Amino acid sequence: MATVAIPAAKWNWAPPYPQVRTANNLDADAQLVERCLTGQAAAWEDLVKLHTRRVYSICYRFTNSDSEAQDLSQDVFLRVFKNLKSFRAGEGLFVVWLTRLTRNLLIDHYRRTRMDRATDSIEDQVKVLEETTAVLSRTDGMLAGREASEVLQAGLQKLSPELRETVILRDLEELEYREIAQVLNVPEGTVKSRLNRGRAELARILKRHKVRI
Amino acid sequence: MTCAELEILLCDYVDGTLRAEERTALESHLAGCSACHELAQDVMGVTAFMERVAPAEPPAELLTRILHELPTGPPASEKKSWWRKLFGGWVHGMLQPRYVMGMAMTVLSFSMIAKFAHIEPRQLRPSDLDPVKIWAGIDDRTHRIWDRTMKYYDNLRLVIEIQSRLKEWTDQEQAQNTEASKPKAVSGGQKAEGSGQKPEAGTSEKKR
Image (cartoon, rainbow over all chains, first blue to last red; front, side, top):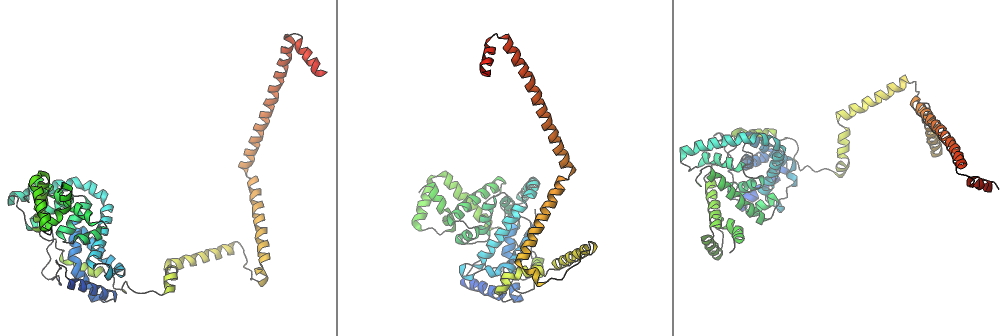
């Protein structure tokens, strides 16, 4: 299983990733997009710095592969560069637009690599189980931090793509239900239903591997 | 509260955003329904677990890689004039080096074919543009091509062979038919003789 990479100290991901989106953040996003559209290279750099972590995180959680997540993140920003003019600040948040774009690329990638996964899945599952058991023997079942992250990755891969993306967007990326509904293009009720099913399924998987939740 | 209603409210219960009366109703249902109780426990447990998970950090080189790969040309919002929107793609396609090279090779090929086939290019005159003349020329050429095609087709060895074979079969069939009709007439006469006077009377009647 791919490990979660830690950034080197020289890169300060500034401005920091906004966990709580305020009106100021939203204005900043809209202004940044406007600056990008006028062709300012510095604005593009700021935009990439601001949103790389979110895009990479979604890609990594979904694919469970660091290299694939990096390639996909790069593709996402290339697509942003080409299609930014189609973003309308008045019609929705930039974060939602960006997440929808990321999600669409992930789904394309998921469909494209279906055959590869079919051949690799058995080996991967055995490997993940061995690693999880080894981790649990050291930690008495109570996991946190990077170890929890690795176990969570293994669990997420066993969820269907619909449930996986919903759990990632809500519990890891902390999007609002309304925003998730816009990203996935489904009603809010469906989002909540998928979230319940995804969480319950994930809990069963973790408990099966003797992870204390 | 039913189990289905609980499932709808469960997300808000986990988030702690339920109203007091809804929360009370939900908790009283949980106290009496073991399946829903287990579901709620699982959901809350896994949510708490995910809060303990370390965030997935992108590697340091990813930012450099993305910024390096981003095009440095004009921004995506560059506005195009109406004629560029209409013909931009078409003209852009024609200005491609491969298209220009292709056109050059085509012209060269035609000129070489014309040279080897001794086709002399003739100067175009105003009278050549007369619609009646153009139409007559096209009609004449079409008929000539049609006649040539038909002649070529008729002279094909395969066609001749097939036609001669069909003719042979038709002749054979006709010969067989004539042979088959002769014995029938003979046997009909014998039968008439063996059956007595009536047929003869019949024939004599017919003759009359």
